[in-house]
Amino acid sequence: DLNPRRNISSWLARWFPRTPARSVVALKTPIKVELVAGKTYRWCVCGRSKKQPFCDGSHFFQRTGLSPLKFKAQETRTVALCTCKATQRPPYCDGTHRSERVQKAEVGSPL
View 1 (cartoon, rainbow, N blue to C red):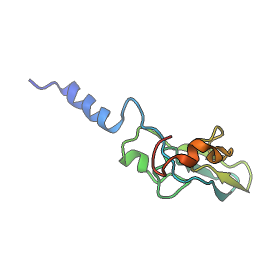
View 2 (cartoon, rainbow, N blue to C red; view 1 turned 90 degrees about the horizontal axis):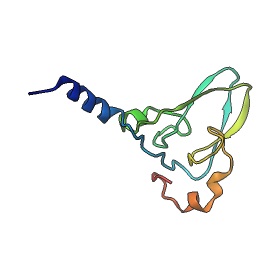
View 3 (cartoon, rainbow, N blue to C red; view 1 turned 180 degrees about the horizontal axis):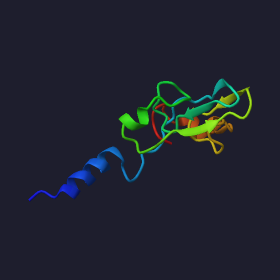
View 4 (cartoon, one colour; view 1 turned 120 degrees about the horizontal axis):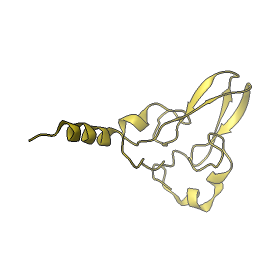
């Protein structure tokens, strides 16, 4: 006796876990980028993107349950975007990468 609801919910749970994966350290230093006023960007939250600091869809294909942070640049300027994924001011670097916790972590591992 197959329950169609169970099949759908197990499929959804596989692709969209209830408990999202934790972000991983992509790099231990920020990346400086020039943002263009009015342009929308997608900052990688999961740390798995190969196009750091921006999203390349890795969060979806690796089934992390995380989504990128979409933001619009208010002015054209150069900023430091976080790649350790531990900033308290996402997507901008706040210096957290200098902490012992981040510096001791392996690149590609969660904090």
